[in-house]
Length: 398
View 1 (cartoon, rainbow, N blue to C red):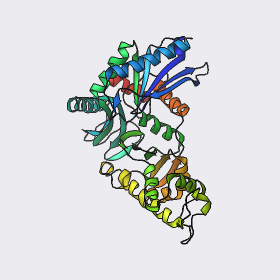
View 2 (view 1 turned 180 degrees about the horizontal axis):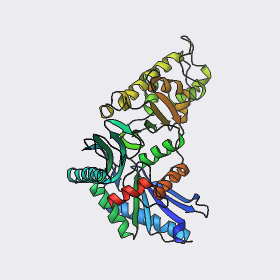
View 3 (view 1 turned 45 degrees about the vertical axis):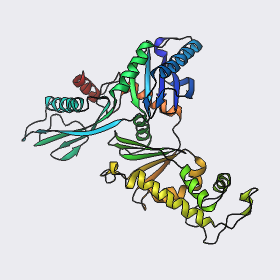
View 4 (view 1 turned 90 degrees about the horizontal axis):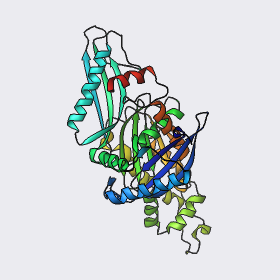
């Protein structure tokens, strides 16, 4: 195989390592030809905690993949999830007093902001820099306003960073394996880019991912990743409440959820059918009670995740779209109307339900970002097709 044919991706999170090998054909289409998922070793609390364990599990499995494919990799692309990223949003200004915006003005602002972050966050390493917004005389402009006249120009950048020690650990591990890290992506960036590319006019939105035992939110504004946060609870907490109050076993609750749609149209005296109790003794339990328990808990979850989350203060006024992704389809389908009602904040927000992003779609987006960059990312990347904006920022940061 040609060296350029295959690309090695490695997704790392607190629970698993997932190795992907992508093959590109003559039409530039990609296909996953190898996928390997295994429990992570040497990572705790979203940090590398045991270098030897982590190194050995990566070494053994990359060697195994290379043997299987009869191919030696020289580079690897990392995708990090829940690795305690830090997000900074900063603005730089240039007083123009009626003069023209020059390329040098923008270079000065960008380099000043980047230097400021590097000085004040010396224990962190920048992974992504996004051109969040451009303002001329306090009015937003879509593109870089080079050549325009005005009185005041402002440029907002959004920075995504990880611990420098984690970054150095990654570099050390892969250099010992004779692998160069070609790129490190925060997974939320990939998912946000995928949503933006596949939904019309959605450059600003909030994404909520709820698994059984954990949840995550991230915020995209003007096609820029601005924030993410991880929570140690998920949809299972709803079942726990229903079980605690009704004394139903979870197996029975799952059967009830599978066969009942809980919404406001449930009649006050409508009861759970006897057939759903399996071998348990039948008891008169109102469907309305289960509805109210789920409604109360989902309201509480929405407040913690969004509406009373102090880290999202000021964000809610800028976006009106929420993308909700629930891993457990049983919980999602039966409680869909409740989720929509609660997370739409009484119809003030548009709620869109998403299927879990497939590995194929995620890697297709990641590979495009790797090849062509992102329309709002300011850090230069290796690109085949370079836009004028990409060439401009590459010149600056190189």
